[in-house]
Image (cartoon, rainbow, N blue to C red; front, top):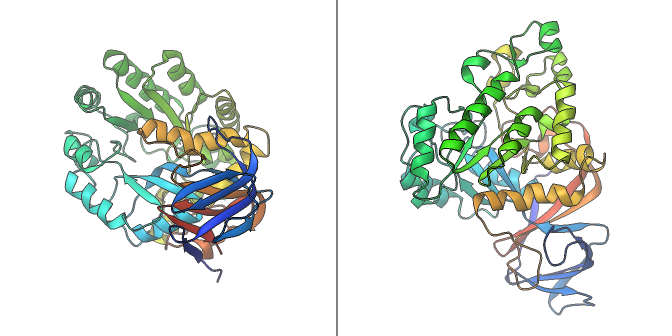
Length: 435
């Protein structure tokens, strides 16, 4: 079995000098520089031509990169209630191994995270993890989509956003009341644009492949109708609103046309690198919601990514147990693991293929999530707190179930050779290096 261990150094006591590392930090003061970076006392002590630093361990970082710490703002939490899939400590470990210094967790636990006491309890439980874990509260009570939850109490307890997560908000009245009420504390709504009534019991994208496989399909119109409704509500009552995940380029165009300054969009990586022909294998690990689209839609979504119509890219990390996945495709629960394989897949399929630059990828996973959530961007600059991801775009590795900390093993990418890997993270005065 492969080791899951990392080497944990306390940089409040020890210093580290990364020699000849290339900084990737769009809009940061040192973006694009290949230089030396000394990190000590939990801060960036110095940047420049540094021969050595007394008491600091020197690391040859030539050919590697350093960026502000990555953040994933779409992570599905299983603890409490579904610990047999993934415990909170397992999630923190997976995020760390994936190079993420922060994550935002969705509230679809058992019970649902719909009150301030739960936000406080989860925050306290996660305080000792190196990766900073933030929590989104449910928009409606128990995420049932009927009555507004205790959103202000959750806001005071530290919730960064409000969403019913895996349950799209179908009640237009509830959504409008939320938009109006949230103006009092500048709350952020995250909603999955999907009409449940149109989607029905669909299992995959509606098209040639669903007909071939004899499965109920979910048409693109299910997303477009939901987007059009939400845009109409936003034209009446504007507010901070994030559409996620968007899987249709036409939907992105409609959102862009409105040019609402407080409205943002995002998608998760599988929609950009997969198409529905993968489902021909009946591998339930390819089942996600919304469904993976056909090849033409995937290509169009990639064009939207190039055109800047997407603000954020996430892993879509949603663990499922054996009980949920080792069944017929129609009976399987949607979701796939994403945190640990994210960078290798994104680097291979998006950066090295020329769809986007490495700088643009870092913007999508480090800068934009923080802008949307109103968090400070930890630029790579002298004197700043060290919240950093150190990574390689050339390192090849095989993704295997043995590398996954949790019991959930629902990834279709196992046994694939990936190119690009996080080498370590600096966060909370500590340096965790992949062993």
